[in-house]
Image (cartoon, rainbow, N blue to C red; front, side, top):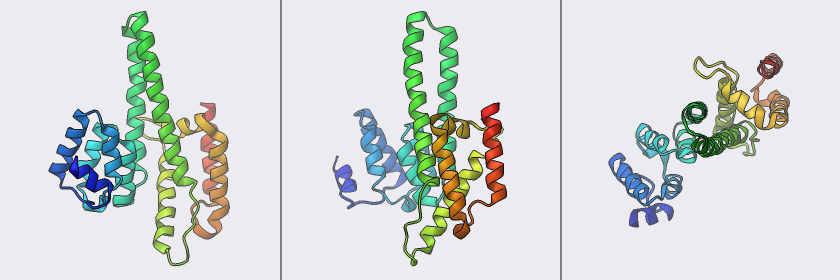
Length: 219
């Protein structure tokens, strides 16, 4: 309890891995995983055991914290998408298995819950991708590092969603298009027009992305 207070007051910004594990286990027993996530967002991820904290966050489905650790800790923006996509795949598999093995009453209850969970992770994926690739560079001229990081973040995510994965194909792209394809096209358009200065997307890239989207929609 005391440790949590110090973290939330920004008086503690680093926790050794073994204490972090105990801290999460303690709050998990109290059904307070949201408080774990709040605490992680106040820590300096560069000082943490990245692999250990990511594993703990993934096991407990703390994806805001996981995103924070990857983004702020090691400037990694594509990897969180893979974790969220795994959740989507598991939930979709759950829907398939429950529809074939449960009784009608149980089937309806389980299916409803799983669909809600699937929608949650779909929205989480959409919000994260849109937040990163839709960001504008509001930094001043002295913030070259921030500008470079933003460009790299967008490039990482665009590369991932427009590359067919061996296991889940174009699932990230399909998911965000199903939620709001118009917004995705608007963002790509804005990125292209801003590319005169930052070079994120060339015309040939944009055309290939549009062709890819059309193919995904048709298939």
